[in-house]
Image 1: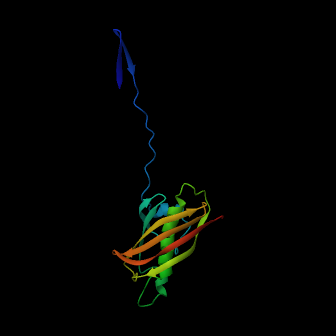
Image 2: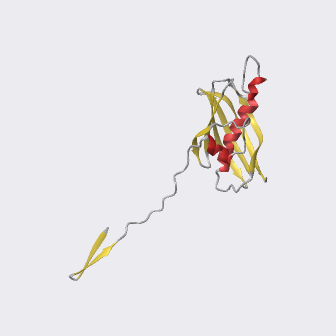
Image 3: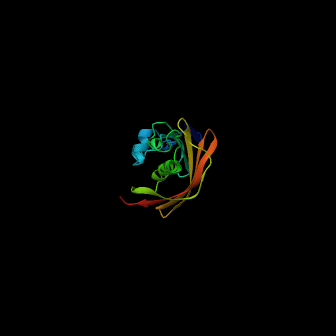
Amino acid sequence: MSTTLDRSQETIAIAVEPAQHKTSPPVKTTFNLQEIHKLLPHRYPFALVDKIIDFVPGEKAVGVKNITFNEPFFQGHFPGHPLMPGVMIIEAMAQVGGIILTQLPEYNGGLFVFTGIDGAKFRRQVVPGDQLIMTVELQTFKRRRFAKMHARAEVDGQLAASGDLTFALVEV
C-alpha cells in the first residue's frame, strides 16, 4: 500500500508495508490412535479410546471406542451373552477426560489419575458391534492439580452411561 502526501506543491510518497500478522497454529480438533498413545500411558488391553473426533481445548473432548467381540473382558463377562462391564465404560470416559487434561496449558507433566465418580448411571447395554461415543466436559480445574468433569457415553444416540469424574495430578 502506498500513500501520497501533498505539502505545498511538493509530493512525498510514503510506502506502507502491510502489517505482518502472526498466525498461531491451527487448534487440533481430532486425535488418532498414535497421537492418543503419545498423550496417555494406557496400552492394550486397557487402552479404551480409539480416536478423538472433536476436541475443544480446555472445554471438552468426544472420543470413540469401537466395541469388538475380541475385547478381553468378554471372555468372562458374560459367556454366551457378552456385555461391556460398566466399570470399563467409566474407565473409557476417564481416558477421554485425560486427553483434555494433558492438553491444558498449565500441564507440565506428571500423571492424572482417576480418583472418583459421582452419580454414575447405566442406561443401556454395550455389546460387541457397538460404537461407544463418549463426550467429556471439563467443569473445574483447581490449583493445577484437581479436575472435575461430566461424562456421557452413547450408542446410536442412546445414553449408555453418565457420571461426574474426578482426577488428581500425581508426580511420577
